[in-house]
Image 1 (cartoon, rainbow, N blue to C red):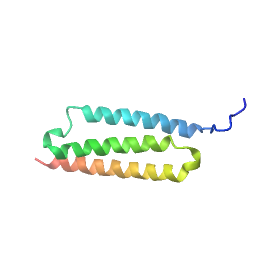
Image 2 (image 1 turned 135 degrees about the vertical axis):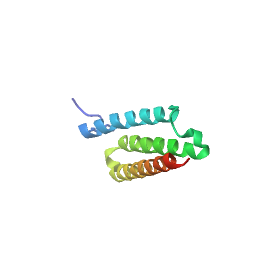
Image 3 (image 1 turned 180 degrees about the vertical axis):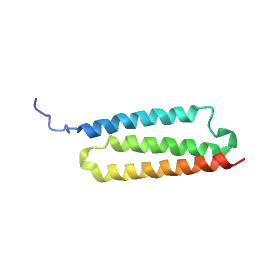
Amino acid sequence: MKKKENQVEVSGCMKACRVIGVLLVLAAIAYTVWHGDFDNKGVVGYVDDFMVFMAAFTFAHGSFQRSERRYIRRQLYMLSSLFALLALCWIIMLAFIK
């Protein structure tokens, strides 16, 4: 089958990353609407929701980048890791606040 001029082949690893990215976004949305969250702590309880969602969103956005934009994809993955680390630290901090 002949490839069109503007089509780019996607490797199996990138297809898996795309599926994982979409699943992470769905899990982040589920975490945001989950009633067992730290939202009873006031405004600071919503910061973890934001960080969890942004970690999933930047990972998913990075996995849908073209192969020519490897540098941007790496930066988005690094930003996703940073958001995930910040969310984890924030959740641990919220767990100890009374």
